[in-house]
Amino acid sequence: MKREFITNRLHAGKKPTGVSVERKIETVQGKKFSWIDLQSPDRSDVEKIAEKYHFNSLNIEDCMTKYELPKLDSYDDHFFVILHFPPLLQQHGISRNSQISIFIGRDFLVTVHQGDLKPLVDLVNICKNDLDQNRKERLLGKSPGHLLHEIIDILVDDLLHISRKVIANLDDLEDEVFDETKSVARNIALLRREINIMRRIANPLKKFVLEIAKNIKKFSDEDDLSLYFDDVIDHIDKVIETLEESRETMEIFKDTDFMLSTEKTNKVLAVLTIIFTFSIPGTVIAAFYGMNVNLPGGIVDSDNIPTFLGPYTSFITIILAALIPVIIMFVYFKKLGWINN
Image (tube, rainbow, N blue to C red):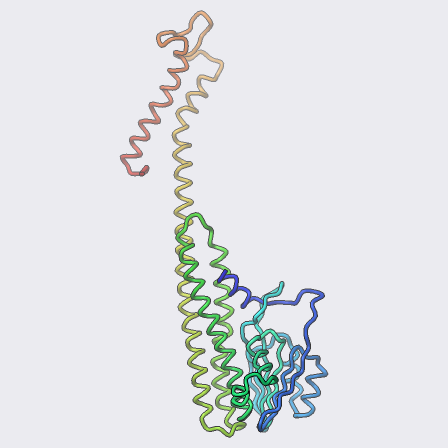
């Protein structure tokens, strides 16, 4: 169950035909700034915001692109950044990351995303509702830089939570690797893919959060925001460290599963080879005495049947002739150590 949860968190793709995407534009007024959150917007929605705040047209193109590499563009009155995080939901299709585009200036913060980052959606709802006034005041009572830190912080914390789930999946997988009754090759491959997806997210994320911490000073009145972002960097480092350890562990599991599978296959082949080898004497003797020719000990005619062991003398003789070589081979193979308990 844990491994299925991680898979659902990390693998997302094209939405199935017929599923409508909820389009939302939320405007939250802070003490000194406005936060505009666009969830699954049309191009016209983004262009209206861009016209109001004089955003670069190339950044608008980047916002509307479903998958754009992480980047940061700095201007005199604002800067623009694209970050990637693991999506919440899984749809049928090719895997992708969830993208959030952010514009931030001295008196505004604009976020553009597809609505599949649940921590961000929850944060918008907190700021719109009056249920948690203390947190709402903490989010909106300062500068847009402080709110941007809160957004990145909750998304990074969610990433850290997912990385811990990966560790839990590794513990479950370890028991299955050494269970000969279960095939775990597919589970290993899926978990390796999840780890690689998260590594492709976490490694660039650290670089761009550092860039944000440098650029945010121009649009924030607080002097200690760098300390806040340092805490976020520490969390990203923990994620990266966890993923690197998980990657090494997965390589060990992969090699172990390969060796155990090879050993199991060799045991099966060894048994089949021994059975085939033991059957060779009987096969040879049966082939000779099955031919329509006179052979020593065989039945020549109805009047010349060997009877020194009774009416089944020929049959018993053939069985003994087949069993004696088998017994000799068994003893010899046992002495060589080819057959063990």
